[in-house]
Length: 148
Image (cartoon, rainbow, N blue to C red; front, side, top):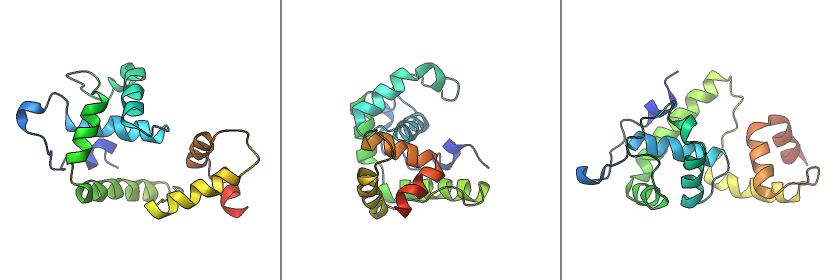
């Protein structure tokens, strides 16, 4: 399997050269990692990047450090969503094949349903955000939510 970021290197970078203080791959990697860990806003993504900067530097170049929340916002607002979706789905498909389908595939419509199911799940005394993280990493817990 390719590295996760290699699925996104062929995306069309929407920025003009003079505004490329941060590498496109760095912006995308930080965003995906932050969202997997529960980030929901551009500020959350920036805070995640700052809190994990030493770890991120093991995998990313970060020539200008961690991008600001405004940089994440501007970049993703300009990025072609269809092109990004194709790259993202290609990555998820390969992960699913690598793990023999042991990865849950979520569509945008399914996410809202899952949130409603998670809100009503009573076995854990956690926030919806915490339960969603558990469901994303623990297939047994996810099945419990979906079956109940």
